[in-house]
Image 1 (cartoon, protein in one colour):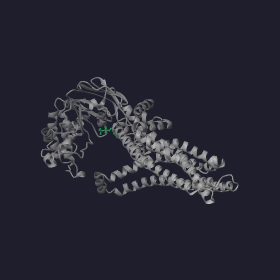
Image 2 (spheres, protein in one colour):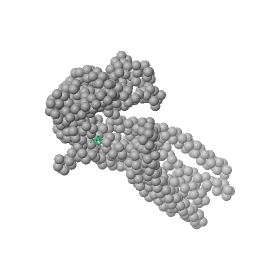
Image 3 (tube, protein in one colour):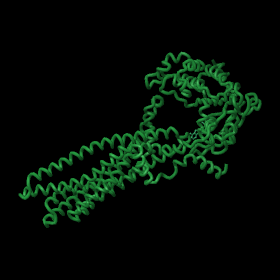
Image 4 (cartoon, protein in one colour):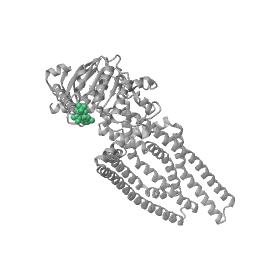
Length: 619
Ligand code: ADP
């Protein structure tokens, strides 16, 4: 293959992840989308929380005006020019206002916590789970997709989308609040608002820089976190722990985990230290600003430029304006970091919309499957795993794929199932390219036993009837499927529909061979027209293997069946054998034809039958 061809193949292979690799959403689009999301999905809570912020932002102005009024009255009373009644009236007004403010504020806090944060997290999580479950297998192999997934998970976990909504609400409502406060302060004396603002501007710079750097650092650390979490998950999986102990590499893995953890922690701590330094500096400048304001107020008071009441109110207002403006700039500063993470979330979620494009179902039963000159390379892999492979499988045929490990058998089956798409060539069902078909309509006709099959912590009956749960109550059918894989009696021991499989939840545990037989029963239970078995008997002993396979082939008669096996013994009973070598189908025919051809199959067969004979003699 020329280098140009290789590039074309890589480009074509990468087309499936263009959506994820594409430009991230623009910040203003992200913000607009978030505001729309909240006001359409939870209008009442969103409205109330906005109201709470409007109230909060006008609170400072109201308090300033009330304080000036109160100080004025108190000063007048002490100087003998005011009366006690209006002083008490003024105090009652302030207390009444405080009470009303706190009642409204408590109510809206409930709305913010339960309505905005919790409900949003629930809805966003739902979308995330749906997207993750819809990711194609080829994308699961893609580090970039996994990174985005992690970012999207972190975005939801850390409430970043609700955070943006609240930040935007704070920003918009605080503009009006701050303006009214500055105008009020300016009316007392024009210099006061300028000093107040100048003393808090540094927050803008600090938070902007910190959040931007924080976002970049978080992005860089995501991969490390994923690795750290993966290694940690090994310590919590029984099978891995068993292997680690016996093989003695627990310590090595623990060291690796610590190393990854330290890198993540060091990055995080560095950021925290930087934040602390910035904030200390900001606080120092703010305190200087406050002292300047106080000195200025004393100066103005001494020159009779402001009254005593205004002097007192100014001291209160000065703190309020510093707080409000600081919050405002702080919020602006946090937006880029938050929006970056939210953009990652939406880019990831939008993937689902693309996947939902509807392709037509395969209407008739599968009459013929044709693999035509197919090439396939895994993402980021240098080598083609399937090369120029061609194979025709007709309805009812039992086809065996044989070949040494790594020759491409499993990959070819994945291509036949549409789990991956060829980079060149095509897979046709009844003459229609699989790329133009809704793959679900193929899966509904397929029963698959893959190498990495799983038993789930469900009842035994559910484990067997997983492909067809609407028939999980057909006990006889389940019993029959179990009997055919020599697992009769197991229903009684596990509790059938009521017990649970697996030790984690107190159920029964099975050996590797038993698990494989249960997985085979699952395939037998599913009444599908296409059966695919990937190394279905690798964990069985030879005696069981023959008996079960014979039974299986008898049942499979009339159904299209593809069996992958590196044991060629069963090939005598199948209709067609395809031999794979280095990604290519090198031979194809019946057992007799391939034996007569004296090629690779004949060699494999002779070697394996000799091994079996020798073993039998030794026994
Ligand atoms: P077989 O089923 O015959 O043992 P496979 O189809 O599993 O072979 O593998 C064929 C080739 O593809 C091997 O070289 C293997 O290393 C490679 N391969 C398999 N899975 C992946 C993967 N997820 N990413 C990259 N390469 C892979």
